[in-house]
Amino acid sequence: MFEWYDFYLYGSLAGFIASHFFSGVNETTGFIFALAAFAVGFIVRPLGALIFGRIGDLHGRKNTFLVTLALMGSSTFLVGVLPDYASIGIAAPLILVLLRIVQGLAIGGEFGGAIIYVAEHAPAAARGRHTSFIPATATCGLLLSLVVIMTTRSVMTPEAFSHWGWRVPFVISVFLLGISLWVRLKLHESPVFEQLRVEGALSKAPLAEAFMHWQNLKIVLIALFGNVAGQAVLFYTSTLYAYFFLERMAKVDGFTATALFGCALALSAPLILAFGWLGDRIGRRPLVIGSAVLGTIFYFPLFGALLSAANPVLAHAQQTSPVIVRADPNDCSLQFDPVGRKRFDTSGCDIVKAYLAHAGIRHRTDRLTAPGPARLEIGPTALIAPDPATLRDEELAAAIAAFQARAQQALDAAGYHSGANPVTINRPRVVAILVALLGISTISLGAYAAVLVELFPARIRYSALSFPQNVGNGWFGGLLPAVAFAIVAATGDIFAGLWYPVIIAGSCAVVALLALPETRGRSIR
Image 1 (cartoon, rainbow, N blue to C red):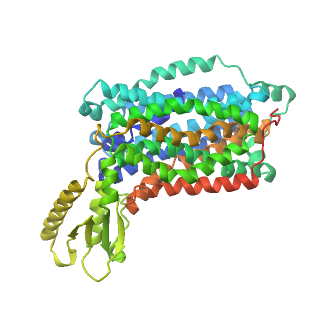
Image 2: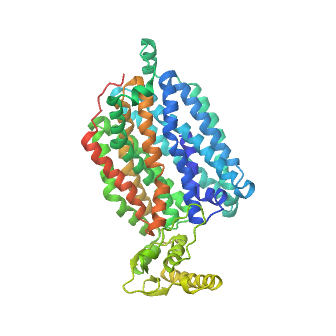
Image 3: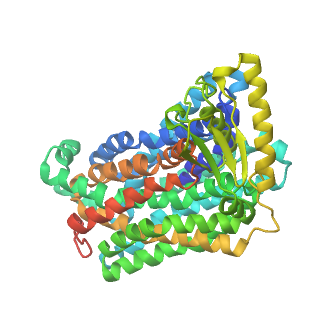
């Protein structure tokens, strides 16, 4: 729980991190950069899995735990005291990324080892219930991070929190690190590992045995594409992406979004244990497949309902006054600028779409029915975009400013720029929808850990299990927020990012149906 508290802090505070460490680019690109730096910690997780998985198979589970925890905790503390871009320039984001890499390496060796350690102590008939505590406490770590953030925000002004208060949750993690190290020093080695050591059955080359023999590599691939990838996208869609969606797309203020999401997490966390117990009764495979199918079917309607419940004015504006860009598609560029140097004022279409992307307005692009300048339609209101071909630099800048002012007035009148009114937020409905989203992911969370342990032999379990676990959660899941928001920025559709988890979850359901065996009842010794 403490380790995942550390890891989730970054995701929950990505908006503040973007403003302090990526302030050299525009707001949208800076936020995507912050999410990308968050994703860096996930990208390196498979490398951490290989490094610490090998150590765990050769030297034991307990000592590996101590190393990963120390790396994780110290990196989190340093994020809290790291000077920002305004103080040390480009060195700030570079050091931040380095710290995220260290965190990623540590968590890559941590989660698989924790699953194995618990499973190798658990009674065979209750292995699903026991291992389900691992993802459940990860969820509690996210909840703890939200509680600390919300408490910190409540005792200071929004300006103070934005300026320096966001660092407090990172700094106080050093106390959690001390408690965690004390607990881990009390642990005993896994009985399964001790038995292997006594019998002289430890693998001398666990990585080669796990990945160079097709019989084992095939299981690794099935575990990744038929189990972990689906669980990962379901989990990160229902947690971090749903939280970002509530705050940035539905425009709910940060404190309210944190409180609502925290309530939903508290209600849904016990479901992970319930589905772990159910997996011990009916098997793991139906839960893995069912969770992926439910996510594929219900994500779009649930996120649409979430917008309506959180910001009914904005949802009504999108229904009654849709925003349409009418232009020649050949004049429209992809609205994503990763280096902050691309100009979006060389065509009327780019001028319109750049403004909408910066403002976070959902829109679609239609082809002009007849040749002419690009225009922006907001319900019945139509605005003609400036034509860069007919204007000089000074005239073009003035024309763009005037166009944006008219667009701002039209969008305000239609209800697009209104933040979620605290009076109109349907809080019980928002929490219920968030619980439904989280509930879909808890089905697979309760089962997938036991599946991983039961798929692999004990002598290579740490190495073989950790790799698909961390590729799935590190790459497929960890990249989800950055990829999804990049899709949203590029398309103008605030729901388009959901295609990423829907396609992966659907594919995982197919692979699991065709190739994933039922593992309940297998011996893990």
